[in-house]
Image 1 (cartoon, helix red, strand yellow):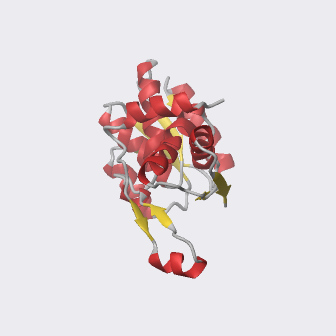
Image 2 (cartoon, helix red, strand yellow):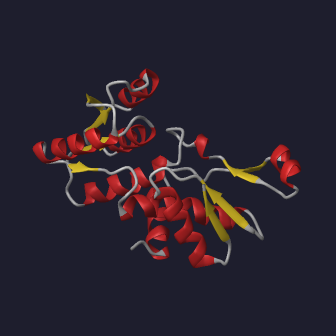
Length: 199
């Protein structure tokens, strides 16, 4: 189970890669709901999403544990993040993408020096392939959301929110695989009594 201490350690580990992104007020949303609404600008991360936080935390630890290669299964953002940090750490990365993957996302992975492996059209097909590749190549599979290191890395968003805005009442977090919401929930609930709502 991920604890606040894990998230604090993750922040120290990833601070030279993942940016502390700004929070901006949305005047339109604030007017619409009758409350101050702020947005966390994770699109300003190097790879364009919050995924760089968890990927950096996990890949760094995998390298410390002796990994010489990493794999991931992703249709875009996670794959870009894994390829980017692996390249920064000078270890190869192979990203398993769907056969119908968006060309611009595949090109972005390649620009970060990630090798591409096409497989199926669903996560249920891609994830086993990425795991198998890791086993065959003596590498480490980097999951997109369901690993403590990934969750701890994503949880650094929650720490930043508490530092950047005073008197937060509610934090709304989008849910895909659940890594971001789990990390943010852990960080915020252990430091405050703020209500966290996942959508």
